[in-house]
Image 1 (tube, rainbow, N blue to C red):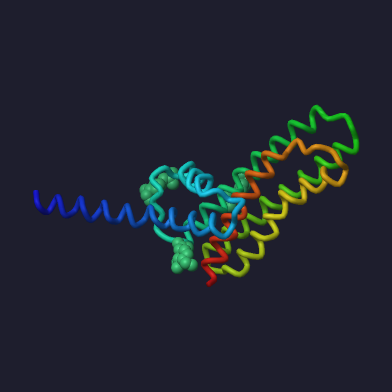
Image 2 (cartoon, rainbow, N blue to C red):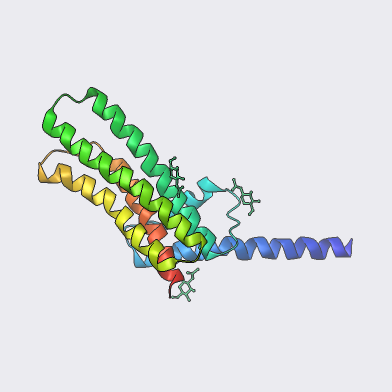
Length: 174
Ligand SMILES: *[C@@H]1O[C@H](CO)[C@@H](O)[C@H](O)[C@H]1NC(C)=O
Ligand SMILES: *[C@@H]1O[C@H](CO)[C@@H](O)[C@H](O)[C@H]1NC(C)=O
Ligand SMILES: *[C@@H]1O[C@H](CO)[C@@H](O)[C@H](O)[C@H]1NC(C)=O
């Protein structure tokens, strides 16, 4: 019984200290990036694995990269839907720009995740920075034409997730 209690305590301690990697990381990121809310950060990781049990920062960086990728894939599907209804050619061109940005981002995020898995953190950072730009480049395509973006929500969510992944990788390199 006593041994069982010790085991319980130890596993509780381990789960608390693991959970705090996510919490501490989200706290650090929300302090240094005022546009990334702490709750958004925590909820994003929880959506991936509600245990919040993450063994280390590198795994957390890979998870954040996967989360950004999932949103990029969702955004591509949304762009395809919008394309089916859109008749206006200049608007179709802007959607095309976004499609290209997010298709490239999916490749860049995938390369970044592979780089992280073999500890090529500087390469991962380069690919994540390039991938992050998809959101602002897509928004700019609409802003420059003074056309309200139909992808504002997707760009916002993707931008935050990509920024979280990038911030974790930047911290890994320090
Ligand atoms: C959070 O920031 C503090 C202070 O810069 C640093 O010591 C700590 O290692 C960081 N923790 C994580 C999980 O990034
Ligand atoms: C969630 O995390 C736990 C603990 O690390 C792990 O055993 C489980 O496989 C993870 N689930 C998913 C869906 O990744
Ligand atoms: C991103 O999504 C694509 C398409 O589903 C997939 O092939 C790729 O492995 C994913 N990459 C990451 C880092 O999750």
